[in-house]
Length: 448
Image (cartoon, rainbow, N blue to C red; front, side, top):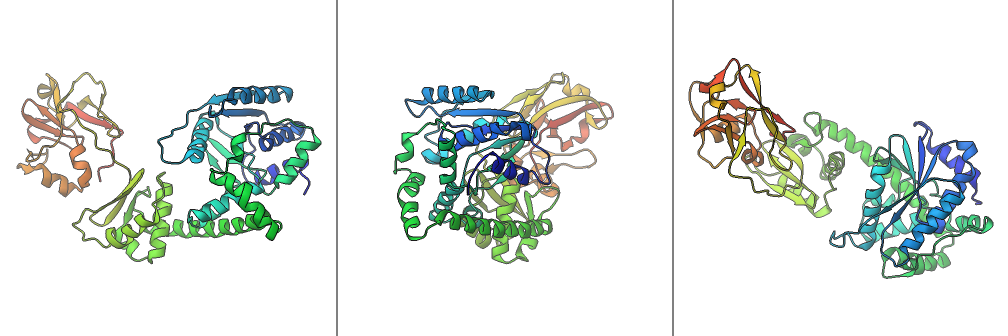
């Protein structure tokens, strides 16, 4: 297959079917041969697509020549009469992801704020990259989503991430570069076979190609088929999620609904629900724990299964998908004043303030000197407005269905030594007045 600007235009037009025309093309421009060909071919057909182009270079600072590479990219963009942006990133060596994955994450983190509504971020991944990715994911024991390899188009930040060269061979890209006498950067780290992708590129795929010519095309077809199967699993998971989710969000799943599904469908819907919640997918070992220990647990049990970045808890007849919680030491006492200023309750717990003129609010006299904000120590008793006798606070929270892991996070408001309000749930009966101070808890975490 011969690659040229017309081929690129055709691919972009096909990808745009059924969605809005891109407002801008942002090209991820490393300066290597692939991204240079993408930028050059896109610029060559500006009169046809009439879409503004921005070249974006990410400087990882990992090589002594990084400043020279950035300068080269700036010059190439200027020669093509294109605007250019460079962003410098730091690689987190302690992320546990490995150098390749950590660099990739830093790169995409740098792209995100640059992508505006309607933008397409174009990446120069091609047919041979797809083959490498499929083999890498096979070695990692990935499921169908991993075997589907690199996606051609997907949502990203406020726009789309698009890879229009998937299906174009490395040989076709190199032929284009030589025909147009392009200059590009050869990163010497690409030859370092200590990195898994380079090992596949330099040693394994050439050996496979000698035995099975056209191996990248074959692997690309397998990735497409895996992608189709993965989409079908997603469709099934979406149908199952509609039957087991409770409320508007997929972060609460009905235990009885899950039990009605086979274990395979349970695992499938749990992976899907985690993605919908923006959480890392549970690994296979954790999915086994969830299906064999957490779902069958007694109703009065409160089991927890966690993995990096996420956790699943059970309470009564529901599973709760949550971001990983990290214990945070709370101050013993904070002051909540009647001046209407917000008091920050700490990471993930929102903010609180008092608002005057609320029916059933706290009596003005009780608030006059300010309220102290504390957290449960155990043994508290309370009589909410509308009730005639005092109850253990623990029992009130249980009756209201507040999940156990949030009960210690509810602010208790005291006037002197008297408990006058429990978060924004209840005001004490003896201080509840027609024109009092209401408790407004903004960005409150889910309690039920």
